[in-house]
Amino acid sequence: MPRPKHDCRVFLDANVLFSAAYREQAGLAVLWKLHRVRLVTSVYAAQEAANNLDQEDQQSRLRDLLEGVEIATDALGIDARTQDKLAGIELPDKDRPILAGAVAAESDFLLTGDIQHFGIYFGKILCGVRILRPAEFLRRFAK
Image (cartoon, rainbow, N blue to C red; front, side):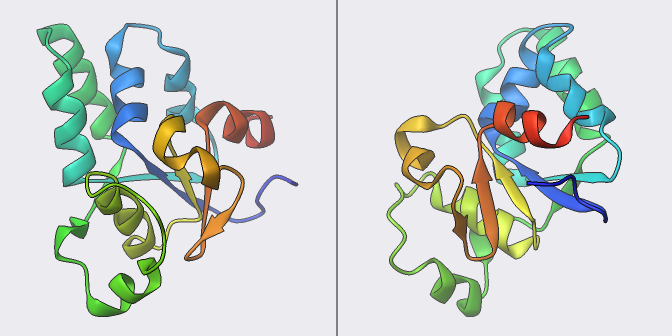
């Protein structure tokens, strides 16, 4: 898959935000340095990441990282059209707002490390959003 010629919108799942903030010099921080990539998340995902970081330095890193991320309208109140797009997609209730947020934000990609729930969708396009693990996205686009 060639590098995008235009700015692409990349939605970050809570586990990606968590991993980027968990330790100083985290490898995922490179996402924030990519050109032609607009990072997006939701209030729901950001709050989930924050709830799982228990040290103040981690919370501080997350706040700093979120300054470089567009916070999309929270997908918990998504419109009926987006709900219709998600019909038939098998995800637990806690993960549906993540995909819905990516769809509602018109993202090109959803990056997640959630193999258990999103694993069957890795590399696939759901409702216009390609689901990838962060490492796969970086292999393809961080050149």
